[in-house]
Image (tube, rainbow, N blue to C red):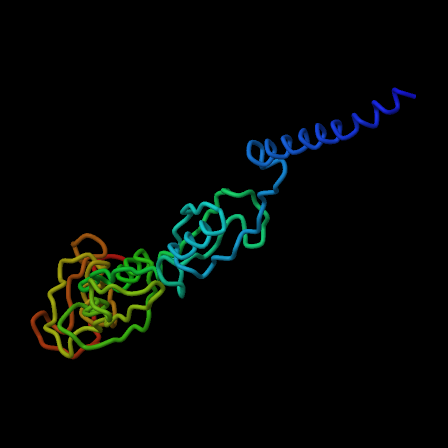
Length: 242
């Protein structure tokens, strides 16, 4: 029975040795391999709506890293505001994970192009190419050819938000004009010249006995140099077949 007594006396030593081993293991596990014992995963906070600086500080406080993503124009969010975050708020990520923040560049702005002197069609194309919209088109009497843009509102060079509308003022020609000389011109060219001055083509007569090449204006009424009102009709006589 002696061996039983020896066994009883050895029990405290075995317990002490086991406790020491477990304690040593825990020390090594906590300080050398802490990730295997203490979970480091945590929820990503919501920083949408904060400035980038505020959101970055919040993420750092919670153990994450912030990085800059896309810069996006936004109609209402001021420049520098976080619009979106990846991963989203509430996602569970490891400590030190990177959180990408997409930030507002503010309201997009454009510059009104200089369209004075252009035709209406040219001006509309230039405005649309600048990312703007064509607004109202106002017509006035002016000493410029019919259909020519005389002004824009806002004026050229103005910085405006996008989208914005640009109002055009277009000439319908002067109140009265001196009749141009279109004799000798091709019919198509004569028609263009007259319409640019706000005049209208009236009767067109064909003189098949004329020796001039076909479609050439050989006579006009009223005569060249005469003052006529805007919108007056001009009768033309053309050689050959129209």
